[in-house]
Length: 325
Image 1 (cartoon, helix red, strand yellow):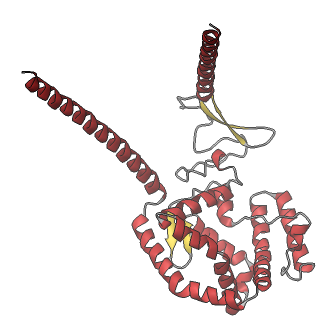
Image 2 (cartoon, rainbow, N blue to C red):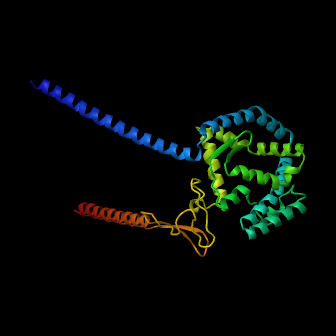
Image 3 (cartoon, rainbow, N blue to C red):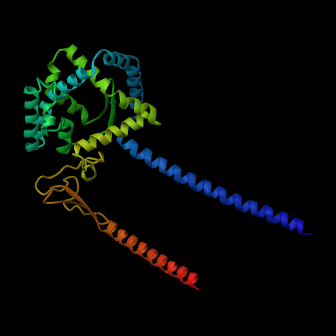
C-alpha cells in the first residue's frame, strides 16, 4: 500500500528538483546574457564601425601574412642584429624632433629640454643616432605625438578605426598622424630608406604579432582593447584612471584657471548621488578621486571582519576549555 505513495513522492520530488534546476539555469543564462549585452554596449560606443573594421582587420592580416611577413623574415635573415638595432636607433632619434614639438605644445617645457638634449647627444656622440648614448646618461626615450597633444587640448578620442595597411587608429588619431608625418624628418628621406624603416619595424613587432595570433581567442578584440588602453595610457601619462579622456565618450576639457572639467559643472560633486568627487591636488597638480560612500563601505567591511575575528577567538577559547576538561 505504501508503494504508490512512495512513487508519488518520488515524482513530486523529481518535479521540485527539475523546477529548481530550470530556474537556476534561467537565472544564470539571464545573468550571462545581461553581462554579454553590457560588454557589447560598451564596445559599440568605442567601436561603432566594428563590421567594417573587422573586414579591414582581415585584409591587413592577409597582406601581412603574404607580403610583409615573408619580406620581413628575409630582412631579419640577411641583416645582422647590430645593424637592425642601429636602424631602429637612427629612426627613433629622428622621431625625437616630433617629440620635442609636442612637448612644447603640451606645455611640458622641462621634458622638452631633456628630449632636446637627448636628440643632440645621440645626433653627435651617437653618430647620427645609430647609438643610443643618451640612454646611458639617464635620458630615457619619451613618447609624445600630436594625438596626445589633441587629447591634452580636450579633443575627444572618437571612434575606433582600422585603416588599410596602417592599422588601428581613432578619429582623433588620423589628423594627429598627418601632423606627425609632416613634422618627422624621416618623412623627407627617400623611399628606399623609408622601406628599410618599415621592414625593421615589422621585424621588431614579430614577437607581439605571434603572441596575439596564438594567445587571443579573438585577435581583433585583443588588438582593439590593447591599442585603446595603450593610447589612453600615453594621453594621460600613465594616469588613465584620473583622466576624462580615458572614456573617450565625453567632450570634457580641462579649464586651466580652476582645474575643473569645462564639459561638466563647475563643482565636481554636482549631481553625483554617491558622493564621488574629482579634485585637483594643489601640490601634485594631479586629480584625486574622493568617495565618501567607498570609505563607509570600507569601514563596514572592517567592522564585519573584526566581528568574525572576535567570534573565531571565542571558538578557540571554547575548544581549549573542552580539551582541558
